[in-house]
Length: 196
Image (cartoon, rainbow, N blue to C red):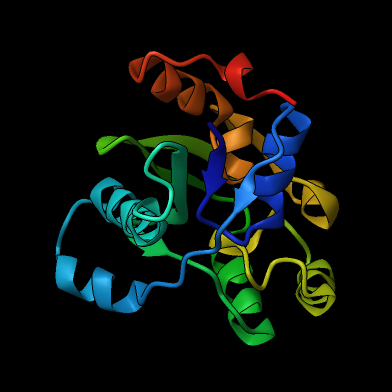
């Protein structure tokens, strides 16, 4: 039995590898915008759960005996759910809006095993530093935050700009290891069953 990660995120892979697991990598390609549009005014936690489940569902059929994990993260700031900025300009605009504020990073998880699902969301409070315009521009120019939910990372250059978090740090990196452990327990499995 293997753990299959329906993601191309190097951060999620790193968390699993640091936790003793070499995952099978099967990046899932879904139309996130179409799913978000279809969900309309759904609660933010439901949106990230549905995105995570759509990712896992695209590959789960190929791995019926394994554990398949899908995740999706978005930042809830001032009542608006924000994904990846993709461009320097949007990154600068996001950081200008979020500096000095608190927001919540929502990470949806969908874990499938033998046709059964556990779907949940972890919310972690993020307190952004009051970052200078020069640092925001330099961070955006680095490219690091462009493909990250909320335009930030907890590790690497982003570590300069997060004053504190309240919650699970692994969920901020992209995959809650404690939640994954609880999901495995629901299937009658142990985290150590997957260690190398």
